[in-house]
Image (cartoon, rainbow, N blue to C red; front, side):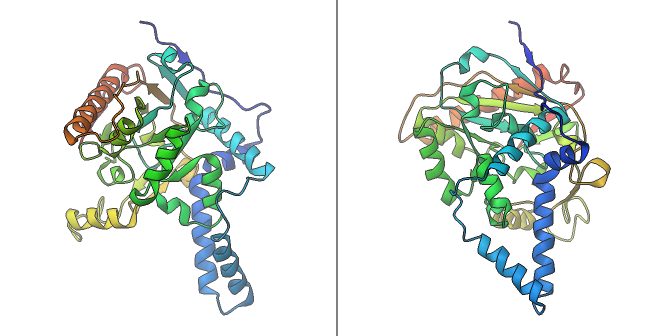
Length: 335
C-alpha cells in the first residue's frame, strides 16, 4: 500500500514576520496577556482605569459565545491556521484517505496532548487542503479556556467546545447527531501530568479514558486514531512540584489537584523564549477509521474492547511511522 504525504498549506499572500508570529503564538500569548490584564486591573482597582478595566473584562464574560464572529476574527483565524501549518511545517499522511470521502461523522482521537495539541488545527473548519469530511469538526478543549475574557470567544469561533464532563457530552452528542466530527485528545490535560521532559519519550494517558469510546459507540461514529510526531518539542516546560521540586507535594495529591482545576500548572516557552512554538516539523498520521456498531447503551466490556483496539492501532501507527517521521529512537508509553 502506498501512502501519500500531503504538503503543508501556505498562506497567499504571505504575512509579514510580525503578523506571522502573532498568528502562530496567539493561543498561548493571548491567555498570558489576559492573565496579565486581569492581574493589573485587580491590583489597581483603586484607580479609575483599573476599575474600568476589571468591569470590562468581567462584562465580556456575559457576552454569549454563540454571537457571530466579526469579519476580522474570521480572517485572523483562517490566517492563523494557514500560518500554523506552514510554520513547523505540518505534513499529513493518510493510511486510507478514501475512507473519508463522503463519510462521517467521526470521533477523531488525537495524541499526544503535549503542552498544546497544535496539530489539531488541521481538522478545524478553516483548515485547507484536507478532505471536507474531516474539517467539519468540533474540537473538545479544556473548560478553563472558556473562563478567559476575550479568548473564550476566539476559541469558540475557532471551533472549540468545553470538554468538561458535565458540559461537553450533550454538546458533543449534538455535534455528532448533526453530522459534525468530534476531535479530542483522549488523554486530555491530565496527560500533561505524565509527559516526559525528554521529547523522544512520548507518554499517552489512555487506559482510563473510555468516555470518547462510549461517545463514538452511542453515535455509531468510527474512531480515527491520529498521532502527531514532532509536537512535543514545540515548547520547553517546567511543572512546579512535578519536575522540580518533586517531593514537596505527593504525586497523588498533585494529581488530585490537577483534576480539580482542569489543567496542569506549568511554565512553557518556545521560540526565543516567547509564546511562539519552536519550528520543529510535524508529521501527523491519520490512521484507518475503527468501525463501531451503534449501541445507545454499550456495556463496559464493549467499551473496553473498543478502547483496546484504539490503543493497539495508535501504538501500531507510532511504531510503523516514527522512523519516517524522523524520530526513530522515540518510545511510546501508554498509562
